[in-house]
Length: 499
Image 1 (cartoon, rainbow, N blue to C red):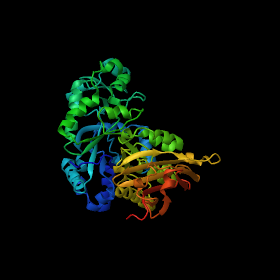
Image 2: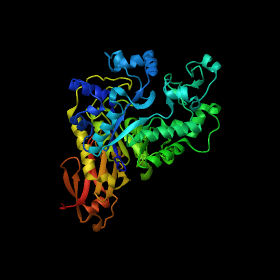
Image 3: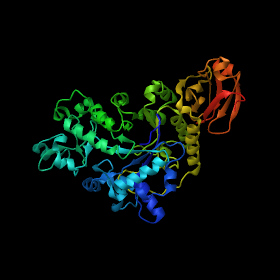
């Protein structure tokens, strides 16, 4: 097992689409065990700690048939890829029939070869797990109906969209509290002790093939959420929560296995307390895209220990492409922010080259889009610069930006510092489309011994910028900054003349 750092950088890859393109490039069939070295190089740029191979498990043939009959889905497929063929619609990776690597991807042997290739590079492997539901043709449906939320034959007749009548049992279709049932999945019962034991067993087996899992919609299995969703139908809530009961057993077999929760509804803290190493920071995503710099600043006031266990991102397979939601300069500013904040960072394959089409996860092929080589170069410099600096091995602190009565532009600036064995670092981000100025007092005291001299040199981590300032200014009135629209500073701060 590859040991991942405390705040890993994760790179998400749509496995089927990636292999489709590699096959086209090579002109021959390819599975995960046949991926050439240069293709692994492309998805493991310097600074990446783990690759998330999204969608490796056996998809449901029955779920695919249901998707093909859905006119709304078919319209979405055609919008994304106008010439998509039926044979290029694989079905949903979150409608899992079995947790076995799909044979078309190379099966378990192909995944083992992929993991070995990543391990040689010191890169970890993350895979998916869907705890809330399974496909209607999952073996569990026939062999273990007791794992599922039950219905009656009358309910199945009255509302066939909400129930599946297998002939031997009537089972509820999967759902969350806010939307109608999903037609292609069957609802597991989070309160059922035998289901909890089975879930722990599946995750323990998955743990032999990877270094961590991303758990889809993890909050749906929390006792209070599940009770609100299913009421008396789920039975009496047990004293123990679902996730501690499941994860404790897995961690006995795989102590270093990483668990990442897709989480919403402000339940990140609760899921951290229930055993997850990291939870999605959807709030930060929404604030960066749609709210004011002040809103982002307030979000970042949370405790550092909590923030270190969040996953920062600007896109993933569930969200629109960053290049389609932000102008180019804003996208770069936001990328600098999430790359230098505490926590795990999630990047999505295609994000670095400016892809704009959000691809439905059902599809094996995406449209051709010209790569933005300048954007890719920027992201690679960003990841490499932050990684080489070692800043994220230190302690993080949010800083205050102050202004003047006749100049409120300081409110558009965000600033934070890192301090530790690798040195002192400062990030300043202008989250606005206009120039902004501020004073930023650095958190190190005015004593010469703290920064090693009376004069400090500030060096650009991502470029060759260098300038000097008196320590008394940095720790007194504060560093004066003047940033253009969407501009950023990422600086190391040290004694002038130091090597």
